[in-house]
Image (cartoon, rainbow, N blue to C red; front, top):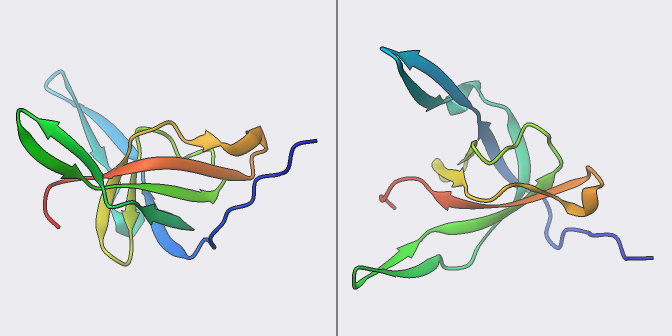
Length: 118
């Protein structure tokens, strides 16, 4: 029997789930996100690894990425954003959230920072 997954760090980082809202204006679909004030609070672990290094057109760039582990929530999807309450920074979910061992207990996904400001 396989050993059950257990997170290695506690879920002590406060986050909010920003859910996309689509509207149609003048025949064009616009995507916006809920505000942190009206979004649900949840806790998880937030691990960064110094960013992801890339070379684009001979320009060295570092993309701020992180991995989040949290309790399973079916409303966390790849098109949502995550708002970190302590730093007031927003991250896009860049991978489909993984339901660890399909047990509906833990969720893991990778995020990338929105915008270029520190």
